[in-house]
Each structure stands twice: as structure tokens, then as C-alpha cells.
Length: 242
Ligand SMILES: NC(=O)c1ccc[n+]([C@@H]2O[C@H](COP(=O)([O-])OP(=O)(O)OC[C@H]3O[C@@H](n4cnc5c(N)ncnc54)[C@H](OP(=O)(O)O)[C@@H]3O)[C@@H](O)[C@H]2O)c1
Image (cartoon, rainbow, N blue to C red; front, side, top):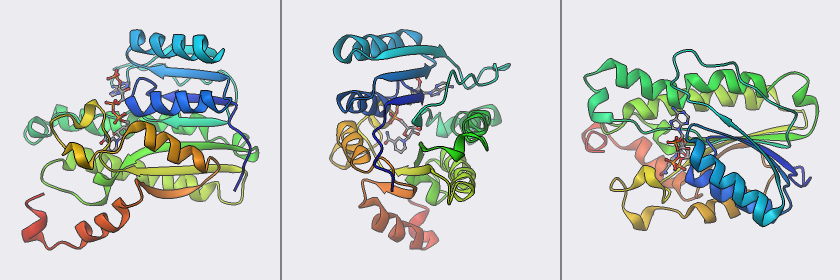
């Protein structure tokens, strides 16, 4: 497992609450180059200003809407030590049950729109040199549940796609890390998850940076692993209530 410090990071979905916490933790540990890609330009500029002012980081910005009809091809200005993908959206699960446009938007923002980015990052040349790709998937990918099966299916697709990348990079210095996150205290869970079960983004950031070179599929926090084992084994009569 590589212990090389992370000096540069490209973040797709940099205005996500957990991405902000990871960027700040990275900056505290000496990361001095960030390329921040997000839909919300104002929030992205605020993060950039913070990283420049407090840590003297060199920051470049790009605006991307993953649901754009004619998206520009991914632009990667230079090789980075860390590629972090946090963009994702729960969407409107209720509407997606009967309107295919919402079902497809959820699939696109969490999975298919990320494929061009993942393809641009994980090139034959890049994986010959040390580096990491961290992708935020979700525990929702483990079982199709009535309450959010569009999101869960999209994250399952993302997980399987990235597992292919992970195995393709086996034996190379490039580490792919798939993060099956449980509830985190971010705007995504407001009113949707019990606050007591929501991990703080700062805690998630700290835990991830404890093992920066880790590769594989992991649950965050770790205790979602046994919990999801139980949820996967629930009989339909119980799982249909989830
Ligand atoms: N919070 C949880 O409990 C939880 C649990 C499991 C997995 N996750 C995953 O963890 C990751 C981080 O989420 P978070 O909790 O930090 O939530 P968040 O604060 O709501 O962040 C979601 C990010 O995705 C971006 N995004 C959504 N749709 C986009 C689009 N069409 N184009 C570009 N960017 C788009 C958002 O940009 P805007 O700022 O422009 O909206 C925002 O930066 C996500 O992939 C999420 O699915 C979260």
C-alpha cells in the first residue's frame, strides 16, 4: 500500500459536502494543487478561495453539468495524485416511479455521465504511475429497495464499472478505491435519514486519509458492512418495507 503523500487532486463534484471536507483535510496534510469541477460555479469559487487563502494552494476550476444535453469531453489539465469522484444525486424517487425522464436522469447523474470521466482518468499510461481514484458509491447499490431503486441501481452500475477498473489496475501502481458510503450528514440526507445514523463528512475525510493508498471496495463507516449483510439477507416480506 503506497504511503506517498497526496500533493495534487482533481475533484469531480467538488461542491459536495463530503468533497469539501476531503479537500480541506488534504490541504491540511500538504496537498497544494486542486482542480475543482462542479456544476455550481459560485460554491466552487468559494471552496477555491478558501483553499488558496488558508493553505496557499494553486486551484483551477471548471463548470460541468453532468445532465447537460451536449456535454464537452472531459478536460484533465495534467496528471494528479488523486482523482476524487463525489458527484451524485438522489433525484426524486417518487417521480421516477412513473416518469422515465426522472428515472433516466438519476441513472445518468450517478452512473452513465461519469463513464467519460472515468475513461479519461484510467488510461493505460496513467495507471503505470502511482496515483489513486476514489469513487463515491453507496450502500444503496447492495439491494434494490422500493424507496430508491433507481439511485441504487445507478450506484450498482457505477460500482461494477469501477470494480472492473479496480481489477484492471491490479498489479499497477494506480489504486482504485470504491467507497460504499452509508448515511452522511450532508444536504442529501436532510429529512431522509435519522441524524444519529449520519456520519460527519469531516470524520469520513479523516478516516479515508488515514490510508491514502488503499485499494478495493470498502464500506464507510465500516459498520455498514455487517449491516448490509443483514439487509441483503432479509426475506422479501421484510425487504419490501425498506
Ligand atoms: N449523503 C449520504 O448519505 C450519501 C450516502 C451514500 C452515498 N453518497 C454519495 O456521496 C457522494 C457525495 O454526496 P454528498 O453526501 O456530499 O451530497 P451533496 O453535498 O448533495 O453533493 C452532491 C454533489 O453532486 C453534485 N451533482 C449532482 N448532480 C450533478 C450534475 N447533474 N452535474 C454536476 N454535479 C452534480 C452536486 O452539485 P450541486 O452542488 O451543483 O448540486 C454536489 O456537488 C454522492 O455521490 C452521493 O451519491 C452520499
